[in-house]
Length: 451
Image (cartoon, rainbow, N blue to C red):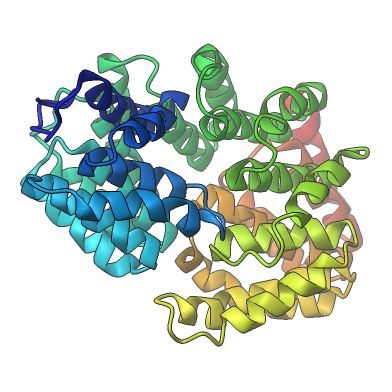
């Protein structure tokens, strides 16, 4: 048998083959059918590829319990026989993922894509992990290895686009994303790459129009891709001062789809924080998010995720914030993990900065976050997502009376958000406090002229 992209698979039943195909396509297109591989793996425990994919699916939960859930499927996969070399690589990838040996996993993904350019699972998995360790050139390199072998697969071009974008190669990123959409207009990762491009170029009106025009494609996607593309649209609503649309997007599309999932939680945390920094009254929306974050306990699966969990707990005054901070300190001392230096040198400083912000100690917020920000990419997240921590730092500068520093940061931010309503209102306030009324008036007029 062969999978949907023509690669041989060791499989005896149509049901198992369909489960494998559902995972492949569901994984790269962010469709919920990816979970169908679980039924296929349970029904065919001797099939190595189905069980490897089931183990990988559980690991993508990004939760401390994930390795335990993945373990029985991984055991089945490792006892399977007569696998192709590519299938053996998938089993090894599942093992490395469960064991947390991410450097070896990344190398394996890249080598597999080089040998089998149409292996979309290994391409996506490789990009996922290089993204999480902040190695954006590697994201691009892995995606390029799939070309020209996967030239007819829209999702390969969507991944190529995001690799270009995270390397700040915006023209190349746009070309790849738009080519992906000529192959498949609903490709959500290409939509996502274009959202990044519009944001980075400061094209708020154009980005809003584009995302609104394709939002109908996201309704049946998994909660992450549905909520995350709406999160990007919400950023444009913040910039343009469309508060009613912003709150509606949050309530209908960003929070509430899968409240226990890591990415849905941090999307809500990040958006609520940005809304408040923009002067939006979010009502009691923090409480429900913090209730679900608190259930995670001492979750240190990812620096990028954990820091946002900490912000939510600190923002709502939850005692779990102290527990999580202690877990971060402990994680930073665990030299057995591949990323312990990122926790020690980056995440730990950022965590103390976030805790200081919750305590309204703005001097320490500035001091601790200032140490972390230059290397924050090493902990994962896109530049658009990591901007949350820049905004926490900026909020501390403003609240702490550091007007000269705040003015510098705000004017630099205006290069990519020139007519941003919250940004120019902040600038006006800072210029007033700096004794520069003419500049304050210019900033206010930008807000008026953008209405």
